[in-house]
Image (cartoon, rainbow, N blue to C red; front, side, top):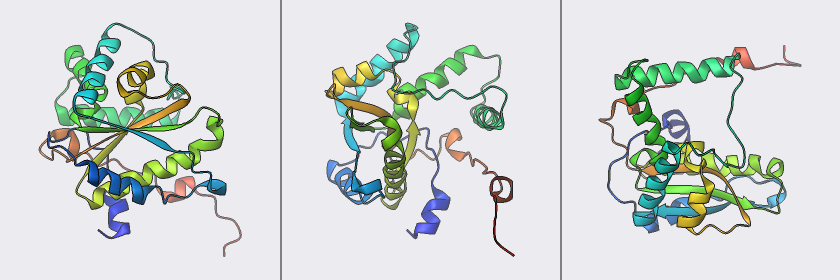
Length: 223
């Protein structure tokens, strides 16, 4: 797949087929993805790849923690100011997803079920947990981790796989540490759900818009 076409086609997948993804294929994707740019070549990224019974246990425990009302202990939050263009974009996405899924605003049960899907990694057969060493300050590594994260998502497309980057998948890091055997000296950054897309799932039909370049770019020194 051509790189420009890959960039255009990348999207968040919110339901996956149950088909397993071979370890050899995931290793190939990661081997290519770690060619991502990294400041001073520090390569601060590490990965925990969860599948099979390990991932199933994490999914179940995530949902149990959610329903018990436990607070998230993630390394950093994803809160957005309620009065901002960024919040508006988030809300518009939710409105379109719920429209596609036929979830009414007042239907609390279905809205809760939708939230649960994120903790189940949208039924993906594999979750890639992005890590970095605790000795590294987060503000020094997030650009690099973001670069490898994007590269994983683009590379996956070339192998017929889909992805969804989701902070929701790391909201309960204690679950990941226990069942994924992630060392305490590794910071848990975010998760990527990965697998073969279920294209019949309504939410996978969404096409999210992007802000026009003229609204977000400052040109200086051009005629």
